[in-house]
Image 1 (cartoon, one colour):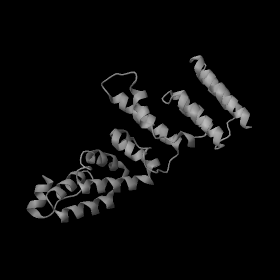
Image 2: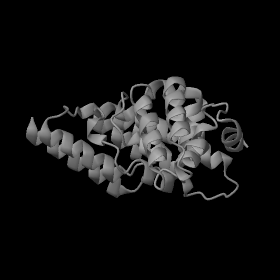
Image 3: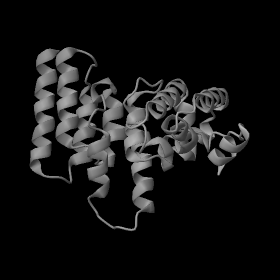
Length: 223
């Protein structure tokens, strides 16, 4: 309807909600003036309350239309310096997984542990909204989301007190991260950290406890 209005009168109302569809139509039907107007309006009126819904609307078109891809990039650049504010709003929970991952893969102004907490919040919300009950869904979703999470940048105490208790990242991966931190000297692993790891995994199998013994041996040889 909005496109028809433009074709008939040469003008139409523009909003951030309608621009994703209009911008693709403008490219498809070769309407350069409408395309330019859409971009100008969008860049002037980006708001955190609308960027997530815009990304979702563009998901199926950004690979097909150059204008849609350009608009996605403009939105992502807008989010880059506002990630903390965006993730404090509920709108980000409605992002599709691919668009959520696209945002998380960028150089955001948030720490890796905050990024993990945002991932967990998003995953829990999606499972809560799902009509399919699968006890492994949270683990599977977090495996996908955290694949590129830079665990080595997370301080040992946060790995143990924030990440480990969620049981969404394997003990083995956390252990490997702590070993890497000890080897490189990036962080100093304290004996208290290992005791806390043991306490948190005591109810699990003996292999887990042996893993923390390995870490204890490692730090004792590097001191």
